[in-house]
Amino acid sequence: MKNSMQNNKMILKNEEFLELVEIEVKKFLLMPDWHFLIERAKQENYLGSMHSKKDLLGLLGYLRMNFAMQIRILNNYNNHFEISSNHYKFLRSDWFKMQVLKNNSISYKLHFEGFKTYKFI
Image (cartoon, rainbow, N blue to C red; front, side, top):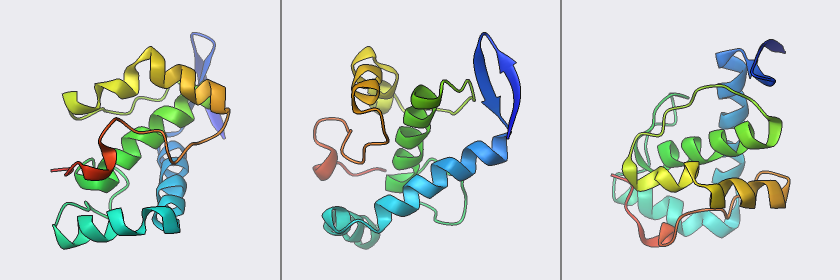
């Protein structure tokens, strides 16, 4: 599964890493707590692509960035994953990292302030 080490951090093959991220996105999409946010994103055309694991647009793109960063932190992976907007710079913040480590698992509620009302376009 792991294919190399860099600075005492593991690096997964890119497809394996993207698959871990996509598993978390799919779990999020099935959660009743987020149903109305997901439906609003669909209706207002900012859901993003469900067909590309690399797409960073819309709500799904944001979720991919969020979950990728959490997976990196929790597993000490050094895989590169682009953060496509300055709006999401909090994903690289010390606060975000500390919350992920504190939770010690993927959190579906770890978002920036105003997440539920933000349009991901």
